[in-house]
Length: 288
Image (cartoon, rainbow, N blue to C red; front, side, top):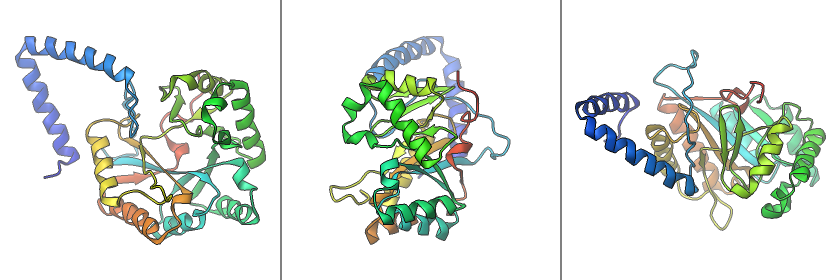
């Protein structure tokens, strides 16, 4: 039987009582945690990396039994952008599109889709670089000055002045309370983006593609992953999950239907609130 958020809290309280019974158990657990931490620092969690510290956010606008999901879509405008907008309007749910500058002006259709995105009340736009690193990520992140220039070019050409950004090909976070870099070779570039005033947002859960660039798996599997992340405190900020997929995966009928069902089931569970990424905790604070 699936555990509820309430049961999760009760289970933790029970475990806490057991922990108090034995001082020896506490010491052993402490040692194990230190060992686990050292091991976790060496491992890259591909599906949902765990931050070293999960900030606890008290939000008076979120009932204690609710969780917040931020739907984000990368690489637009692209094939599938119109289908994405249709799904969002069908479900009346908001999302954030992380745009690539070159894609916005790559064709007449992409320029038209950019205008659709600009006018849409359910979508906010954010920066995903101008070149998408030319899809040569290792070389791209070796040059922090060029990385900043690339994001600045996208910011100016797309008129994205709030400086919310996501790095291409990397799950990087740079907010006041979160510092995560999936590959250490990108660390200097990530720090440079933060110094330049960018609020860099990664993700907690990604819906990946098949070899044919369609959504891999089904909505039921993704729903289980959402529950697992919240139950095990794997989100970067407690009770807040950033979900990622891409516009171009929404070209076939099956993928469109699966994303639609995913959002529908989340809504019908009555456990989740949907927000745009600009409402993520701490994102509007002045960066250190």
